[in-house]
Image (cartoon, protein in one colour):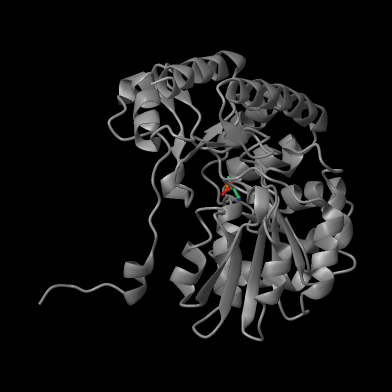
Length: 365
Ligand SMILES: *Cc1c(COP(=O)(O)O)cnc(C)c1O
């Protein structure tokens, strides 16, 4: 008799890497591939952050601080809250997984829009909770009205991704607030703001003001995108202290490594650097949007560091493969729940020009 695995293994969605298979690893190592498939920052971390990592590296013989005291204190200072309300994780994805584990079990429901972040389907798969997917509304914007009507007594967790990945659309905090009024207090609402710094629709911290009014709200953010620290794995959530304690209870004590703690604690001090990165990203957003429009293609109203492009009559597989041949990695929409689309992250000016030139050749047929 051979070994058997847990039933949930068959439910796991699996993750596809951002760089298409068949892409020469040497080309990636040489830096000739435009990596526009994973919504990373094209800019390396701030020099002071790299220095903090270097300093922390000399005490790798010690376990990290299980309470991430400095990082949580700096985050609490930045957001004018108490450290007890700040959870940190090995990437914000770890907080999502821990939240599901702490909140959901068979019989419970986990609700989110679709298409949305590819990680969310892991949560019901792991916990055995029922997944409720709500289709996006017009313009690929999340339909908060439809989401509110799907809430039941069994709903344990509801996720709003804002701006939404992969569609890049954003909902202003006032609308999120009106939605929260309609969500009963037994439902934990995670507002996933991985890209919120890049939107120009609203005050980037506006949703944090809702925390005082809605004890069931959790605002989730990350160092992976606008801070350029995707490789380190550090994310955080601000919500009730009971939420923080619950996610801490289901994880190993040392989930956030010492380098990530040191880097995050330094990075949060450099908001001027965040502003520069955002300005550069917004300039690239305009460049890509204009280029896409010039090709006669349409895209959703982007508010993150990527565009969601409708390829029209062009074939998604051929466009993705053609871009890969040109050493440009983007995400095929089919894998993200939106056939006929591609999701392209903004890179440097040179990378985005390369992307637009490649796309022009491919859609001209
Ligand atoms: C990239 C991303 C994250 C960040 O994940 P980390 O684990 O912090 O790297 C979270 N949510 C969404 C919607 C994302 O696209």
